[in-house]
Every structure is written in structure tokens, then in C-alpha cells.
Amino acid sequence: AYRRICLDTGHLLGNIELAASMCDFKAHLIGGFVDHQCNQLLYLESDQEAVIAMVALADLLDVEQNLPPTPTLLPSPTLEDYPPLADGALLLYTHTATSIETEEITYSSKIPAFLKEDKYNFPFGLKVPLTNTPIPWGEHLIHLKETILKRRSTRQFTGAPLSLADLSYLLSFTYCPQQYRQQGLDGNPDFFDLDLIQTFIAVLDVTDLETGCYYYAVQAQELRQIRFKNFRRELHYLCLSQDLGRDAAVILFHTADLQQAIARYGDRAYRYLHMDAGHLGQRLNLAAIHLNLGVSGIGGFFDDQVNEVLGIPAEEAVLYITTLGQPPQRSAPAARD
Image 1 (cartoon, one colour):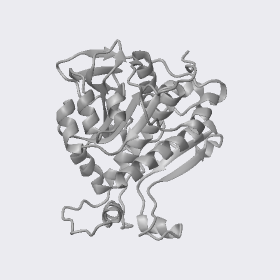
Image 2 (image 1 turned 90 degrees about the vertical axis):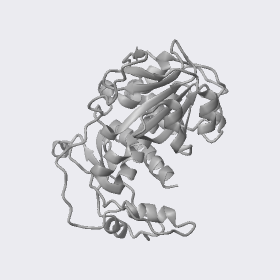
Image 3 (image 1 turned 135 degrees about the horizontal axis):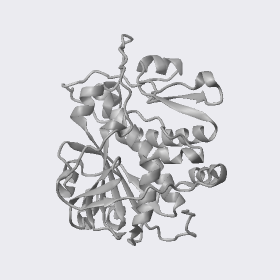
């Protein structure tokens, strides 16, 4: 449940960031704070409801509010011993374990980079370059506004293929925000620490692209193949036998090295990682809906088996799965140029 809470919060942060940009505001995400004090400020009963994240909005039309990027993440303690927990107590315990309760805080001077370099460069397999064409969102971003309002998760796919061009559009909007400055969006949107998150893509049916599992190298803008088969049957099982996993054309996996993340942020890394994964998932959702594609996030899966089946490096833990495909009924295709 806590995974889903953090993922859903990330989706909301994605909407807030885009909406703020359209209204000439900069959304600054704040992940490090003293939890109990923030809960008290809002008169929250901490055993019932609690602050997960905060967003500061800066008016870009006021020069004094045009602030440079500043670290807003703080580490929490890392727990190694866990007491026996009664049924229903795990959610509250997990949140408490990721909390910061001391006011003696040392802020890091390091600003997390936005995907500063590609982590993996496998010495084998196909490498597929991607186009860098941004999605045109229309005058005054009207199509983006409409898409935010109508975004819904798809409940069924037909099994029909996606085009490689559409996959490139999806990845462009999700991972290459700098391409959208000319349309009026923030070219450097605020995340917590995207340097920790990697992306792997299981291709089941994409025109002009071999089936298999690929690592998405954001900086090189290419797909690097690591497995060479169709995983449709296995993915159906890994997604807890949900038909979305069987009938999707593409399944995208956000992963992170948990040991590295915990070394940097303690147990609070769990919040940051899943909110960032949800934030990326929201951008992916919006792009898919605009292109009249089907999309649905999956937070429940067989965690320990995904890496072995797909060939994802063992140190990478899967945070979030997004399925993409053709919905049963499609409206007229969205403008792509």
C-alpha cells in the first residue's frame, strides 16, 4: 500500500509541475522536512494522515522568486532491526521508519542531477537510435491542458502493435523536458533525484523494432537490447496474471539500486524513489493519452522474478511498471507534427 501511495503522489506532483509551468510558476519539490512538525502545522493525526511531500510555487514573473536549483532532500535514519508487526500495522510503521524526527539537520550541497549520464552500456545486443521529435501540444499548450483533464488508466489492450515513432514521442515527453522549452514548459522540471532511477523497456510488439528487453539510454537517446525474445507469457505472469501484461505492446520498468539510494538518503529513499517513478509515470500517461494510446500503471508484481526473466541487472529493484498498448476503441489520431 505504501508503494502505491508514493507512486500516486508522484503522479499528482507530475500534474502540479506541468500546471504550474503553464501558469508561469516554478514548482519546487521539497522532500526533506521534520515530519511531526509538518503534521502538527496542518493539524493532522499522524496515525491517520501525514505529509508525504511539499511543493513550493515560485512566481516566474517576479524576478526575486526566480531561485536557482537548491537541494531539498534530507536523509532519514536507516533501520536494520524490525519488530514483529500486527496485521494492519505495516503501513504506519513503514511511513514512520522513513520519517525525519530531528531538527538537527545538515543540508547537502549537492544538487541531484537530471539523468546526467547513462549507467549501462552493454557490450552486446542491438542498439536502436531514437528520434528527438517533441510532441506538439498546440497553441498555449491547449492539448496538454485537455489531456490532463481527460487522463484515465486503460483497462484493456487489443494486442495490436505500437509504432516506433509513437514510442519515441512517449520517451521524448517523459525524459527530455528540455525539448519542450520552446512550447512554454519547464525545460528542467523538479524531481527528487532522477540520478537514481533507470528505465528498462520490454518490447512485445513495436513496428520496426525487434522484440526483447532494452535499456533506455537517455543521454545517448538509444535503446540497448539486453534480451532477445518475446516475453508476453512471462510478463502476463509477472504482472500477477493481469491481462494488461499479456496484451500490451510495450511494458516499461522503472528501477533503482536500493543500496545506493539508501546509502544516500537512508530509509526515506523509498519515498523519493517511488514519487519520482510516479512523476515519470504521469508524464508517460499524458503523452500516451494525447497520442490516443492505452496506458496503465501497475504497482503490484512479482518483484524478485522480474530481473531474472528480463535480464535486468540484479542490483536494480523494480519500482513501477507502466503498460502501453492499443485500446479497444481509438479516436482520431492526435497531431504529431
